[in-house]
Image (cartoon, rainbow, N blue to C red; front, side):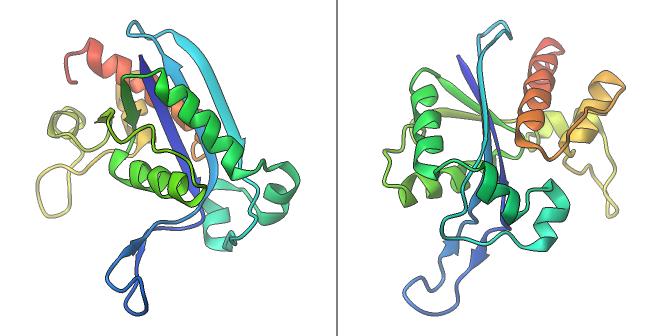
Length: 193
C-alpha cells in the first residue's frame, strides 16, 4: 500500500541563529494536510484533506498568495491539528510506502508536527519515494537549468509532461495528492520509477 501525502504550510523551514535552537532548522506549520492511500495497482482506497485550525501560528500573506488559505478561513474551517495528524498516523500504519512530490520538504514538516502534537511518529520506518528529485525523473522531464543540466520538475510540469495537460487546483493539498499519485503510477508504468 502507498500513502501519498502533501502539505500546504505557513512558510519555509528556517534556521535559528540564537537561543536554545541555535543552528537548528525550525520547520513551518502545516496549514493543510492531505493524504490518500492507494493499492499497488493504483486504486484509491481512502482520501483525506483538511485545513488545520491555526491555534498558535500565523499564516502570512505571502503564503496565502500561494495556497489561498487565509487565517480567517482556517479559523472557520480548520480542525484541531492533533485530530488531523492522528488520522494521518492511522493511515500510515496501514501503508508500507510514503510518496510525495518533494518528499525532502514534506516529510520533515510532517515529522515536526507529529512531535508538536505529542503523537507517535508512525512514518519514521516507512520507505519514502519522491516524484520530484530522483535523477531518472529529472532526466525523463529534461527541463533545462540555466547553468546546464536538468532542473527538478514542479508537480504541474511533471503532470503536463506525462499527460499533456495541467491539473485543476494546484497548491491545494488534496488536488496535489491526486496529481502526485497519477504521476507516480504513470512513471512506474513507463519504467522511470
